[in-house]
Image 1 (cartoon, rainbow, N blue to C red):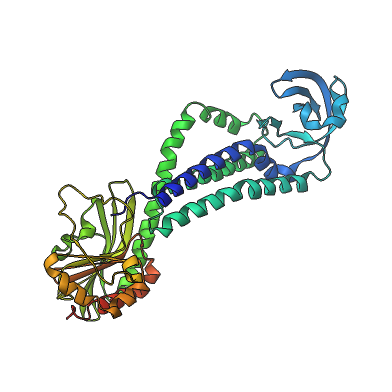
Image 2: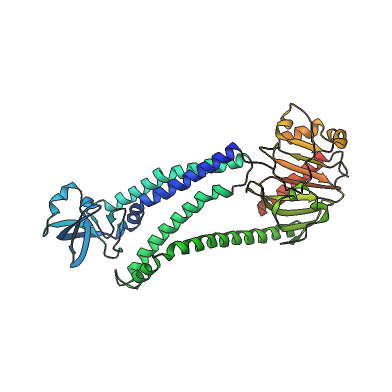
Length: 419
């Protein structure tokens, strides 16, 4: 099994940076998100100052608009309106009484400074935030995922953290928009919706988020699994194979190294005859000793598809091997095609007594074939051959093409071992 590597660690660091930066950007630009959505609803109005109060963000102007008590921070009006800081003065502003009476990032939302190009300006500001602030997040996530995939490590664990953070931000933006839309449908500020929102915005909000966010993630994952199951069932029917969501692990597969992990899960079994050979196709997932998850589509041919010695063909390990205590020691390495591209892409293991027979199987034709097709793992034992690509869960619509690739690998490798 593969251990932690420098690239995987770098992927985690990049993902964490993306998560922190995305949260920081969202909190610093809440007003840009809000005004970018609300801008079309504002209209010109006259604000009459009745009192000036000192607040942490600077002087706050309290007054009236159309007979309603409103407020705006003096700093939002700009230097040209500094003379408006006395009671009785009037100031041109933009006003939307349907917007909740809240402030974001030190700016009042219901009353804003007058600007003839307000709508275009706020939309441009929002676009600037998205492009300048969120583009680095996209680049960091892309690089993080690329580093993981370059080592054929499934995109799980820490790499999903920024995705959750970005998703949470999208939920917050959606909540803000929904808040405004619902508030518009009420009788104005102070309606029943305001009372409900005030009640749930207390100490239980954090607890609710801790419960609802994981629950939502589990529901999405369950839906994706159901969708995959239904599509695989249709693919199995097209290949004239039986399909079962779960099944007992056949005895001929139980001894393979692939199944020698903790927290192993098998689902979506397809079985039957494929090209005159018994075949089993299954979704297989597990976690290693490094808390790294892996999932792949495994394909087994046999019994009766292999008559050569037990062997294991896989990519070179990237770090310390993590195995269960009860696991037998790994087979010794058999040197095959030393100094060739094949030796750089693969390691062959077999019992010492089978070394000569294994080298005979890996002729130059076989090693040249695998050298141009890196990433396969092949195990043989008990007249059965097992194939998969580490971390590759094949899409249902690609199953038939994947089986064709597996069959080609089986036939090339089994030139002297297959019946």
